[in-house]
Amino acid sequence: MKIILRKQVIDILKILRDKKDKIIASDLANDLNLDYVVLMSAINDLISYELGGFKEEEINQISLNKEGINYLKSGLPERQLLGVLIQQDKKEIQLEEFIKLSKMEKTLFYIGLSNLKQNKWIAQSKASGESKIFLIAEEFPKTEIEQFLSIFNEKQVLNYSELSPDELSHIDTLNKRKIINKTQRTQRIIYITEKGKKLDLNEIEELKQVSKISSEMLSTGSWKDVELKPFDVSKPGPLLKAGKIHPIINLINEIREVFLSMGFTEIRGPIVESAFFNFDALYQPQDHPARELHDTFYLSNPKIAKLPDKERVLAVKDMHENGGNSGSTGWRYEWDEDIAKKTLLRTHTTATTIRKLAQYYLENDKKPIKVFSVDRVFRNEKVDKSHLAEFTQIEGIVIDDNLNLCDLIGLLSEFYRKLGFKKIITRPGFFPYTEPSMEVSVYYDKLGEWLEMGGSGIFRPEVTYPFGVEEPTRVLAWGQGLERIAMLYYERKDIRDFYINPIKWLRQQSYHK
Image 1 (cartoon, helix red, strand yellow):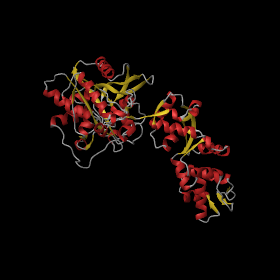
Image 2 (image 1 turned 45 degrees about the horizontal axis):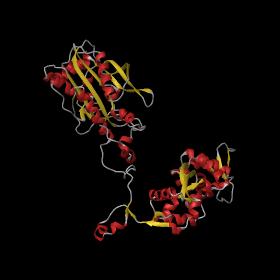
Image 3 (image 1 turned 180 degrees about the vertical axis):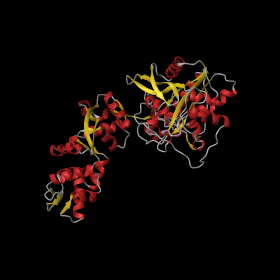
Image 4 (image 1 turned 135 degrees about the horizontal axis):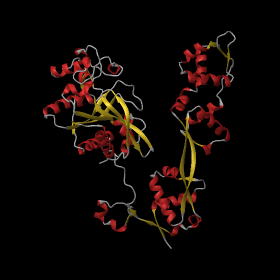
């Protein structure tokens, strides 16, 4: 009975019959200059005729990490320290001077010093009251650990199976010094069956199989003599690296849809803001620490902002000094208009909200309004995995008569439910321009715990009265950083990832509608 195989499969079968050593699939693919997937397709053809097969085995490997590669080039810390002594021609040296000459981090220095003593190349003494280092050896041959490290000059990755017992003993030392990476991977071993070994090659007929028909085959009629390779439509196609919406923009669009579906109108405001709208209008005293340079980015050009109409400015001034007509006593200090004119990069979008609300509320005959903002804000903070100097803030505000905390909790529940969080809780909190205030937490199913999301509350009379919003009219407000939600949505532990833009991660993101 004839066995029909592709030429590629026949060639691989011949190699398997001739080779006596273990054949690793990836090595065979490299030797034949074949794509690994193509090779395994050929092996599957052999499996179907019981002529060959493969088995999988786990292999442990080690490679040098970034620090290890540096040591391979420059020498281990002890070798570098030895070089300092030899270069400076120092047979003895005070410890503090040695540290300065080495230009090493202290942790690395003491690791190197410890190994120098262990190698019996130096001695340390405090006989004179000051710690001194003495060079006591005449020769400094390569240590066993250095000899083992030099193997990486020839190979970037070492398999445990290729190492001798003595070499394996050095792995723990390198691991403790945190200069290697340990990995485990699966490799496939190709083998030939007894049937494959005994098969008469004359019983094999070569199959002329093609994956596509060319124009030349059509013109010559040679397409009649070949067989089209069957297509497996269940196999994944090539990965398309197409452009897509950035995850942050995607999330902003979703949040906009949530607000719009709840009847809100979006508002925008200037990034360069006056201290008046950013601080003073929110009843923040002019000596408050948040106004300092370590928290806020002030501008030198333009240095002064234009304030709103005189009536509005005087109302805010009176509120700070005496409490205005709100029933408050105010802050009891002399308010300075020049401080209010300072320009800065806005630290929150509430400045935009106050600016727009006063305008909209008065222009619309004091009708109820609902507005929101999703915009950039800036704070003079040290950037780390949970803080950014520039980020996006979300804010929603409702203005109407006789509003209370029950209305606010209802809005919060609906807002976070539409974002995918089914459970929310609120607890009393403190925020400078709302009273009463609430902290909002949502239950995150994947972590099985409650997570704080942001703040909310009812604007204080000291904030609303200067802009014509007086009892029984009240303003409900809530807001938070967008990146906080993004970290949950996209399961990122480092907030910087959204702006460092790791390409591999971005390609894996799907578009949410």
